[in-house]
Image (cartoon, rainbow, N blue to C red):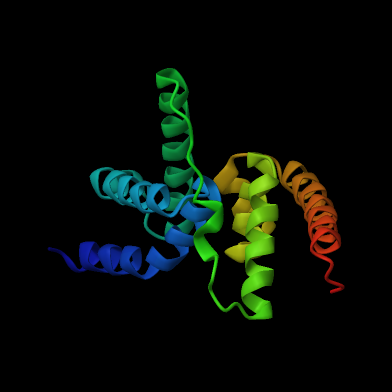
Length: 171
């Protein structure tokens, strides 16, 4: 293995936590996210020659991942399979701290966003990508990304406010 290939592999390994988080934002399911990361890594390794050294590897692989998810969603629709979300009672009986409850409320609110908004939030607010990087990954103009982020933030605020009102909390 050449030093360039070793560096490529090392950088891919370093991206795993970010890929898993983005996979979770895309799929809303831990197991599907794991599968999606594996598919993206396989595609990246098989098509390594298409990546241009000197460009951002994370943008390239995030785009691969997004496209792999689009392929998966289309395949599922063709097969008329239903998406299964994690069981709602997954955390019943768990002594939850406020931060854990907040995280669950945010995850539930994120799940209710449309896919375009969820992807924009996942890349910019969760992964910390610049607007330009996120727009490149999503293959949309930066103005479109900005609009999606604004609408997503408004929607999240509304959903979180509704959630707080329903549980009787005043945060």
